[in-house]
Length: 439
Image 1: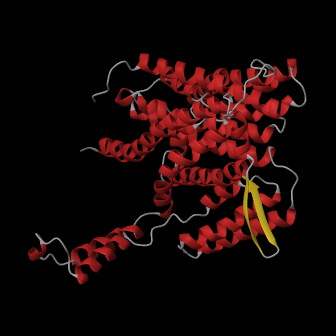
Image 2 (image 1 turned 180 degrees about the vertical axis):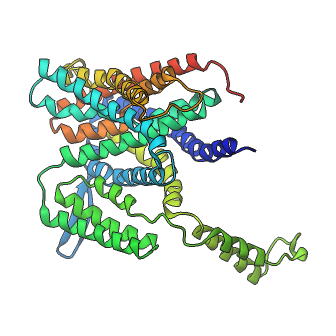
Image 3 (image 1 turned 45 degrees about the vertical axis):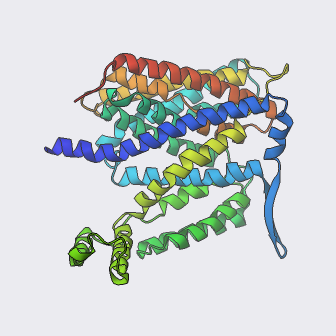
């Protein structure tokens, strides 16, 4: 096996795992979105809206902490989602497709164009026919939904080259980083400085522990929970705490591979136990110790990212869709409004143009190189899929608009733009790659 094929195998294992989990996660998102829409427009629509306003929390002496279910999902569960996104970004920057300038340039430039052009389109449309209130939605069409986009491209199977899938993964991760920065800078409410500085102080404490090679993940998560509460009280959106905590999660392994193999070789093979249904206590303890050692040779970042993929893609994101996608259509609902049109055009047109144009410019200027086996027609097909802005776009819309009618209009625009991007993007790629890639 040559070096190129070894690299392809190494890359594909991580990418394929992400693609497989995103494929099913995307299907669940669609199903839960349909359930939310049907429920919100049925005879039980009052129960739908009432459910998310139910208050939960706890009291401990004079301390009381309560939020409605909708906030527990958007501020709590989504902080876990952003924590996983932060882990993905850190891994890619350290050892993945963003670890060098040559690797990162093409998807990074594409992601930059895929954020700037949609925002510019939104601002232009709003300046022509919009209002100051609708102007706050400029950040909505900037976001790409990593689960939907990767889910669709994975459903196309082996016909799509691995290099194109890797490009989409890196693009979506950089896009997520851009969305995080937009939320932190532009969609932050009035600041509570004591709470913010307390949270930042705890993060600095974790940074010092990381420099000292401290590796207790449970302790880091307990401190992270306090950081999350501080950010929640500070006015900076609580999900940002999840990202910052991920950046401070240890990367280095606790145990070297050589030491692990030495411990494996030290285990004695007892042939008499071959047909035994049970193991002696000392032998069982040896295997348990080996399992603990196996955990130590894994990077905490990779281990946590792997452990979180299923719960995030199969639980947190579908629940988020159920809680946020339920637009109630009535005679007063403006399906075609300034907000819905600007968001839909920004996602479908802006993403396609922005990603392709900036990637092409970077290539022509010598800043980036095109992966072997793909061309800019292929990049355009992936760029269209980038207009799938569902989860992250709805999340930003919920921060941008406090007025329910405008929030509903933004969601309608997200539905339209995402549907167009999903159908046309997958159709374009299926035409470009009509047969299975057997190579």
